[in-house]
Figure 1 (cartoon, helix red, strand yellow):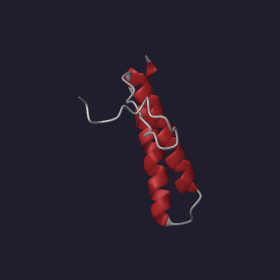
Figure 2 (tube, helix red, strand yellow):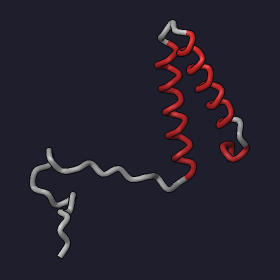
Figure 3 (cartoon, rainbow, N blue to C red):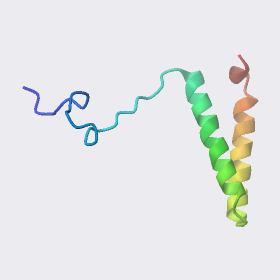
Length: 74
C-alpha cells in the first residue's frame, strides 16, 4: 500500500497541495523567463536606489539577449 495520500483526491481543496508542472516546451520556458524579467525590471525601476537601477538594467539586458537570439526568432 502507498502511505502517501494522492493530492488530487483529497476531500478538502484548501488543504490539498498545489502541484506545479514544469513546461516541457523550450519556447514556453523562454516566454515565462521573459515575463519574469519584465516583472523584475518593472519592480526595480520604481526604486531610486542605485542597486535597483542596476538590477533593472541587468534585467533589460538579459531580455535583449534572449530576444536577440536566433533560436527565439524561429
